Structure formats: C-alpha cells, structure tokens
Length: 253
Ligand SMILES: NC(=O)c1ccc[n+]([C@@H]2O[C@H](COP(=O)([O-])OP(=O)(O)OC[C@H]3O[C@@H](n4cnc5c(N)ncnc54)[C@H](O)[C@@H]3O)[C@@H](O)[C@H]2O)c1
Image (cartoon, rainbow, N blue to C red; front, side):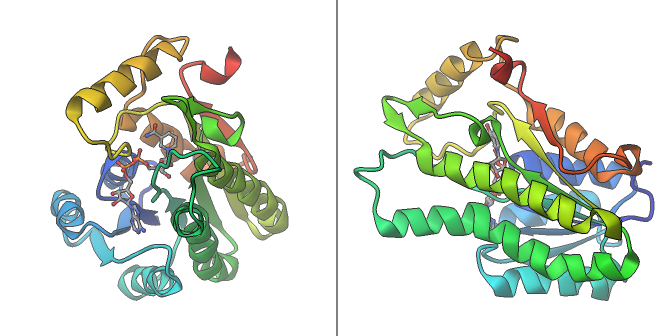
C-alpha cells in the first residue's frame, strides 16, 4: 500500500500506460481523479477502481479548462492533490517537409501544453501542502532521432524532449518546496498509441520495434506503471529531476 491515503491525478487513464497506472495506484491505496477524452474507456477503468476511490473528468487535456477542472475535482472530492501523472499523449509520424501547421500545433498542444497546464493548476495545491510528486511521460524519443517506414517522428520526439526539460526545470524550481518532479522514459510499449490502418501493420511495427531493444521484446504498460509508482511514492523521497529509463536497454546500444 505505497500510496495509502494519497490523492493522485492520472491523465490519459482510459488506455495503455495511464490505465495500467490507475489500476496499480488503486491497488496501492490511492484515491484517484482520472481523465481522458474517451468516456467509455474511462468509465470502464472507473468501474474497476470503484466510486468511493475514483472520480472521472472527461475532456481534452490540451485545453486549460480541463486541467482546471481536474485540479478542482480532486480537491472537492478528496481535499488534496499528492500526485500528478501527466500521461495523455498521441504519436505522430511525418517528415518536416509534409507537416502542416495545424498538425504541429495539435501535437504540441496534446503532448506538451497539456503537461504545462496540469502542472500550472496542480502545483499551487502542492505548494500549500509543502509536498507533492509529479511524473511526466517522456520517452526514449526524448534523446534520439527516430524514423518509421522512412519518415521521421521528429515532432513527437520534440514533445518528449520538452517533457524531459519541463521535468528538470520544475524539479529544480520546486525542490526546496517539497515537490519532486520526475519523468519515465519508456521504450516501445505495446499499447493503442499507434492509430494505424490495419492490425497487420500494427503487428509488423511491434515486431520491428522489439528487435530494436536489446531484450528482444517490447515492454508492457504494467512495467511502466511500476516505474511510475516508484517515482510517485515516498520510496523515491530523494529522487527529483530524474529521467528513469524503462526501455529494455534501447538507449544503451
Ligand atoms: N507506447 C509507447 O511505446 C510509448 C513509449 C514512450 C512514451 N509513451 C508515452 O506514454 C503516454 C501514454 O501512451 P500510451 O502508449 O499508453 O498510449 P494510448 O494511446 O494507449 O493512451 C493514451 C491515452 O491518452 C488519451 N488522449 C489522447 N489525446 C488526448 C487529449 N487531447 N485529451 C485527453 N486524453 C487524450 C487517449 O484517449 C488514450 O486513452 C504518452 O504520453 C506516450 O507518448 C508511450
């Protein structure tokens, strides 16, 4: 029960890493405010967590109104905010020469602006408590250039490099206030993040991805949730500004 009596916000909680994190946090005793665009998916996770332990906020996390509602709901329902997990995100693959301004804006807003907005609305509560833990979803993509099918994921990688820098900047700014800010950097994790045409293409992508990891396989969302739990819990009381690699050795090659 490493999160007994803690109140945690998890964005992107309807699927993948966010869903695995919400489930694990519930087992570890946390009370949860979960958010996603996908209402049916969120309702399923909330049903597992139980109404006395979980609340849901449906909305686009790239909008300030959603971030504000999330913080308000946590305080109204449970009186405090101990943990913020900035997980919601989308993948994007397109070369810079083909990318439109709208595509760039959408990706930056969902993957990076959302983190800024959630931190903005949660940190004042953590400052009052003189304690809090924030975990951002960065990536192996924070560190390297990557291509898929010959096209670049450069813009996605920029959002993940931004998540890493946001982590470091907030970590040093708020360290003396009792707020720890860390990020996890997953390798390829088999979730729904690749919104692709056919199941064959998705399967082929994950086969190729597995071979890029020295362990010879992709990760599972539950393996990332365990790393997030460590950073969110008091077990990591002297850890801040840390990019925790959970990548099957990918970046050690
Ligand atoms: N899967 C991987 O290989 C991998 C690797 C490194 C980092 N990550 C990061 O982990 C995080 C979670 O990804 P995942 O793999 O679990 O993907 P996923 O697609 O399974 O889950 C992402 C969730 O975010 C939600 N979401 C997307 N846009 C939203 C918006 N505008 N407002 C609210 N919710 C929104 C989706 O509805 C979905 O439930 C992302 O930030 C991703 O970049 C994933």
